Length: 202
Image (cartoon, rainbow, N blue to C red; front, side):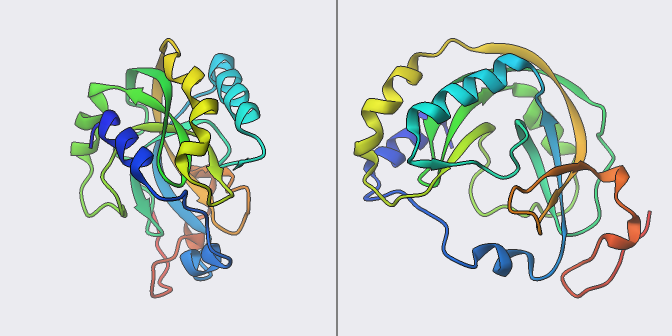
């Protein structure tokens, strides 16, 4: 999917999507650590841009989880973490605002991400086409997307922020509403469980 197609789909949607009550519990089913390979972005300019956009769209948004600015490269799910590409570095651009029906995000352009994704084996836990992005916030009211256009348009002209990202194996704490990100190497192996409750070791 392209960013332009994503934007057009957003504009044509009847309403925004918001999470149903209990969706987190149905998702984690008692499991705690959700494994992802991500580019964690710690530059102040990135957080400043996110904060500015979030403030402009408040109170239509709620903070996203995980709150740490990051670009997901691969979703491993509730299985064991994958350290095979940890430490790989890429150049990327974080650009203008775009939106899924469920959340506002910043477009991320990085040809090397496709190469990184091709190195992971197995099936990714993904329910929509991959599009590299940096989430700003999730919608909390099911209003028509057209209602947001006056608020989003100024941020459709943002210049790109250029930076270098380093791939890290991280875990999302599924039991935490804020969905904190934790280095996968800091989690005891016995705490990783599969869908059937089996434990993993490394």
